Image (cartoon, rainbow, N blue to C red; front, side):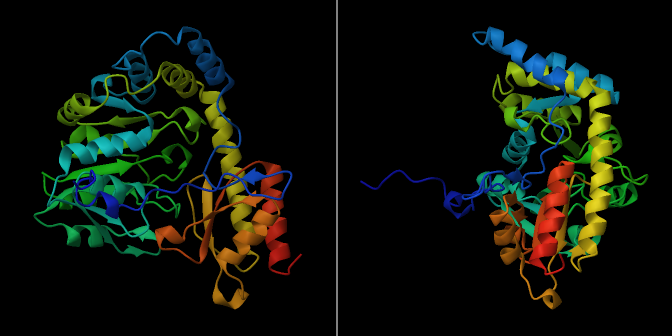
Length: 364
C-alpha cells in the first residue's frame, strides 16, 4: 500500500521562512529582520491581554464582536463587514480557499509578499507573478496578465519587502481595469506608517465596490505580532463567505482584548509612527551616503542594494552584521539577492547598524 499523499501541488510549495531570530557567538543581539516595532505594544494592550488570561477556561466570542466594533469605531466602518483572524495571513488563506480552485490563477507582483504564492497553491491554483517598475507594482503589467482563469489579484500596498506603494489613483485604475468577477485583495499591513497624501489603504474602494477586500494587521505598528491578530474589511457578500469557512473561535481572547486596547490608544500609535518617521529618514540618508542604493520606503523598514562598484555583496554584509549581533533580512527569496532589508529600530540599534556598515565598507 502506498503512503498517504497530499493533494497534487502541495509539495511544490516552498515553505515560508521568516527573518532570522538569533545568531551564535554574540552577547547582545538586535533583531532587525521582522519589521517589529521598537516601541512594543501599548502598555494598555499588555494589561488587557494579561487580564484576559485570568479566564482561560472560557471560549472566546466566536464573532469577535467587541473587537470589530472597536475597529469600526476608529475607522468609521460597518462592523458587519469586518472579519477578524489569527493575523492577516489567516485571512489571506481563507480568501484563497474561498475563491481559488484547481485551474484558477491569482496574480501578484514579482517582489510581492511570499505568502501569496503559498495560499494560492494551497488552494489548488497557480500564481502568476508579473514584473514591477523600479521595485514598484505596475498596474499595466497586472492588467495585461488578467485572463479568463484569473480569480484574485493580491497586492501589498505598501509592499513588503521593497517599502514602495501605489497611489490611490493607480489603485483605482487597477480596480477599473479588472473584471467584476476578479477579487482585488489590498494587503495594507503597513498602512498606519504611510504619510503620503496620495495614499489610501483601500477602505474607500471596499465601501463602493463588490470585488475589493482590504486586509490589515495588528503585528506592525500595534506591536501584537506574538498573539496573531488581523482583520479584513469586505463587501458584505465576501464577509459572509469568510464567516462560513473560518474557524469558529479563530481569534483568542487575549488577542481580542489587546487589540481593542491597542487600536484605541492613539497616543501610543502616534509615538510609534513619529519614531519611525524620524529614524527611517535618518537611516535612508546615512546608508545612501555610504554608496548603497536605498529603496524609497513609506513603511517601518528600508531595503538597500550593494552595487557592484562596492566590491561587496549583500550576503557578505549580512554575515558581517550578524557577527556584530545585528540581524537583518536577506531577501534573495523575493528575487532581490543584492539587497538587505532593515527594520527601523531603537536609536541604539539604528546607530550600530550604520556604524557596522561603515566598518564593513571600509568607511569608518
